[in-house]
Image (cartoon, rainbow, N blue to C red):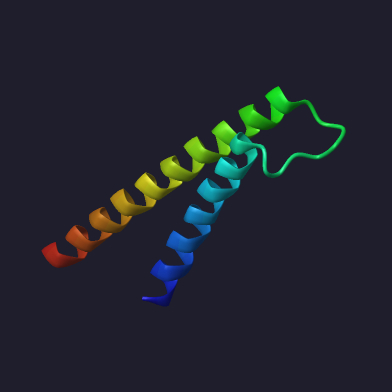
Length: 68
């Protein structure tokens, strides 16, 4: 149970960090704004990918254990 909470919270934090990059709230002074938006988009997509992958693997593991 605690493992699920940690996994979901880390993945959501990655998505939120990406959204902060995209929106411009986190912007180092000497950085290119376009590059930071690209990094933000990559973080958001990576976060959603990891979230979907975790859910699929968890569902597969659960169904595999129920078959035994």
